[in-house]
View 1 (cartoon, rainbow, N blue to C red):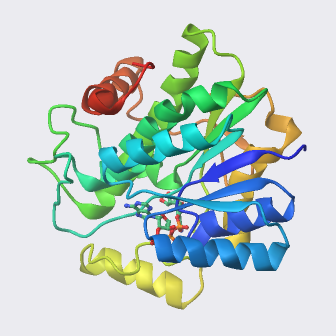
View 2 (view 1 turned 135 degrees about the vertical axis):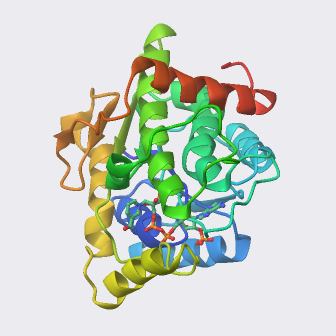
Length: 294
Ligand SMILES: NC(=O)c1ccc[n+]([C@@H]2O[C@H](COP(=O)([O-])OP(=O)(O)OC[C@H]3O[C@@H](n4cnc5c(N)ncnc54)[C@H](OP(=O)(O)O)[C@@H]3O)[C@@H](O)[C@H]2O)c1
């Protein structure tokens, strides 16, 4: 693959950091996104040292803030003339207490689904300038055990639980990705593909420091301590595959397993209406921060 400009969100730790390092080794220009500038600088320096690739830059935004996402995206649009690959990797599961963001949204939904929606929209002008661009959304197999969506309770006033919201957010991000592929087709934007994946159960710090409830915490900590999951190297493989493999060059709107196999996402709660409902909700809340692509 020729040298690409690649932005990876949440590249300061875990799977995103591994993906950034591997793609840097392949000689690409890497934009390490982080929310903490010092940590991002340290990771960029480490990647340069390990790989010998000097084309590593950083971009900073707390993805729990629509304003911060817009500021970062505007900066990238000014600095670069195109973007080839966007990997929406950052994500988290939060604690058992319901917390709304500064934008008034439930934070699991905002970080894992609304933030990739907004960032991808804001970077469309740059992605359109690539001869062949790809956007990857990191979902999770957890989408398959999601509760039924309630589009009348998006702020979770009636129902919130940490793990349940995580599962639902990962279902929403698949639907956002699928709808994005249709949206691009409607707009005759043919140079950008959109796909989602699941990394496996991966031994990162993911979820280890959040109090999600006794049983859920126990499962997370026992799996971590016993090393029951996949290595971080294995966890990064499906993102890297979707970002670089010629096998998926023309594929769009699909979901891939952690073994890089095409899969149908779980259909239990799927309907075209539901897919459109989450898209419309993202559009409504993100509209004040969006540019020409509304
Ligand atoms: N690990 C698993 O078993 C597993 C399974 C299924 C899906 N996933 C998904 O895989 C992705 C990566 O997870 P991981 O295991 O690598 O987790 P991780 O080790 O906790 O890394 C998460 C990354 O996201 C960043 N991040 C978190 N909140 C952010 C915010 N508000 N603004 C900006 N960046 C933020 C973190 O930044 P800091 O470095 O500042 O903390 C870090 O770089 C996530 O989307 C996760 O849901 C993971």
